[in-house]
Image 1 (cartoon, rainbow, N blue to C red):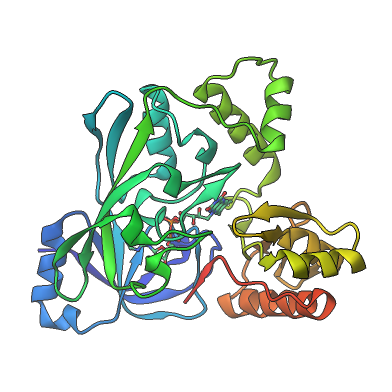
Image 2: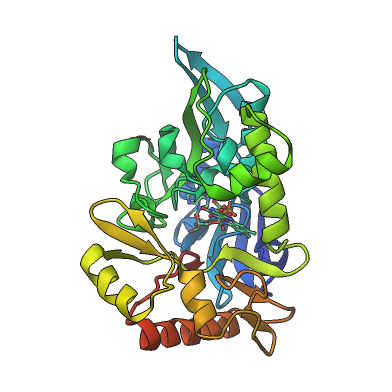
Length: 339
Ligand SMILES: Cc1cc2nc3c(=O)[nH]c(=O)nc-3n(C[C@H](O)[C@H](O)[C@H](O)COP(=O)(O)OP(=O)(O)OC[C@H]3O[C@@H](n4cnc5c(N)ncnc54)[C@H](O)[C@@H]3O)c2cc1C
């Protein structure tokens, strides 16, 4: 039988460090664990929420239902062909462990995504991305179990409908499934991607002229460690907002008013605006408001200096969002899931 805890604290299970609890808490490591819950009327009636590493979730209140904590384990090669290796990982594995596994086998494609916190099962939810790469570029398929019927279903990349920090699991399929494993398609002849400026600079600094995927990973790790606040030291979930994407015509008008506007070309004749730059321009960078604020080095990172409630964090995010809208006419969307 699946062990279920009652009135369980989630403080250590979310990287904002918000002190909330849930009515029930269960670790799920097999399909049978899910079947047991569904067969038990008491638990099946409860609202369900899947929690991985808690590094992309803002709890604003206690959760009056059952939290299913992902524990699906295992990483292995499922097949190889001439060009690619297919690696499958349990949803409860740490994402960075999967990256290290691929590096160890010299399979390319995830090195730029080194050191992203959280579990493998959450990676498809927002199509994690960093340093010029996104999960969708290496994604092959995933298995998920329907939380109401217990039926497993395989999702292809197309079915996941990946977008910028987006997938079907943030839309129609939100909170309907528990992802149990993810399979990646990795390059046996790695192609190095150092297009993101900071990587080239870091490699130069490391005196590397012909980088391997290991070198790229090391460069990314160095950059991330120097730039991003460690949630063990200060509560945060990385970038709180997405970088807004706007049509090029709108960008041209805005750029006319703000000549130093920071933006990058995006797909489909659009531009991606730097949310961090706009937040900084509005004076929020490093400004503390009680227990919360936007980080002193990373304006896009909302932080809990200690003891903040989820509501305080959300209220601060709303104020930041409002002032960016007033100054730039741009509505920033939250990247972090709010519950
Ligand atoms: C310091 C820091 C830096 C970060 N940098 C980046 C970055 O560079 N790029 C980036 O993309 N993200 C980044 N993030 C955000 C975060 O690491 C990723 O979104 C990560 O994938 C979240 O994983 P998690 O296991 O912690 O998910 P959680 O926070 O536990 O869950 C996030 C969402 O996914 C759902 N979910 C989780 N697991 C499953 C599952 N098995 N089945 C179904 N639904 C599930 C949850 O219900 C929730 O809605 C950063 C976070 C921090 C704290």
